[in-house]
Length: 108
Image 1 (cartoon, rainbow, N blue to C red):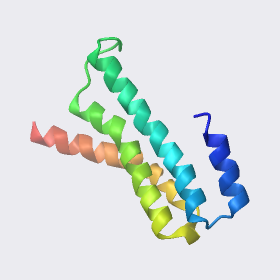
Image 2: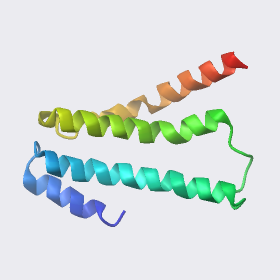
Image 3: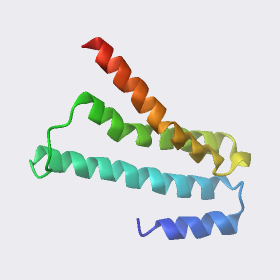
Image 4: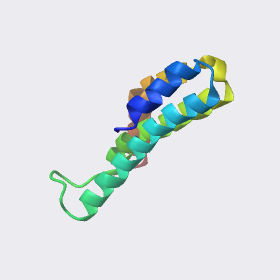
């Protein structure tokens, strides 16, 4: 998380369409999200997380933003003229989570 300001300065100073700057910025965000998921998994397995055990729906809730930031990273690198606009893909988190919950409820 401490590296994010460096990635931001790199993105701003390198220009809006620089693939390296976009990759560093979005890669940093994706890495932080990924490490947070790993940390939570470790806490759950060690029994240090309070609350009820995670369900399949909870796993969808936890992993959907990580999946979507990865999609945004791929889009931003494939089309660098978009800059960081592909990050708006994260707005799809709630609809994707609701769809996943509906699908898992139907399977029961």
